[in-house]
Image (cartoon, rainbow, N blue to C red; front, side):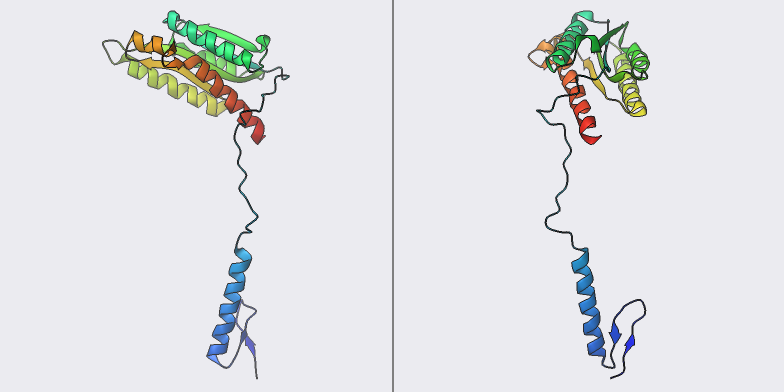
Length: 201
């Protein structure tokens, strides 16, 4: 029996078309078996462990930037955020509270803090209560987008604790009332991001 070989394949070409076709099918099946992933291969899940502690020995700083506008609300947010950080093991001296006049200035102060080499992350806190105009919508959108951009540009977490509410009552409920405290939530979000960064390092 004379044999030839198909171009690009180490497959013998028989005089019989059926034999050649059978050889091609066997080669194709072998290729599929080689490409099939092993059943033992499992995806690696990376997430902040609830029990993992951040590196409290690092000299890095966490900045808490607080708007003084609606201070009766933002003061409660700031207090809860600081208490949450301390409860997690962050040292008092590594928490820098930076106060600014209003929500608009949160982005500038965050930029000053986050560009420092010692800064690990920032918690931005404020309270914007809707008035008679749409001023609050433009302010909230600009501040939120600015803080997100700073986080991405510097590859450091910025936790958003900016209340955007329709009434003073809603702000009260979100600063220690029935709806919890957004300062505490922002601090926990920052800690989770720090743990995630450590897990993926």
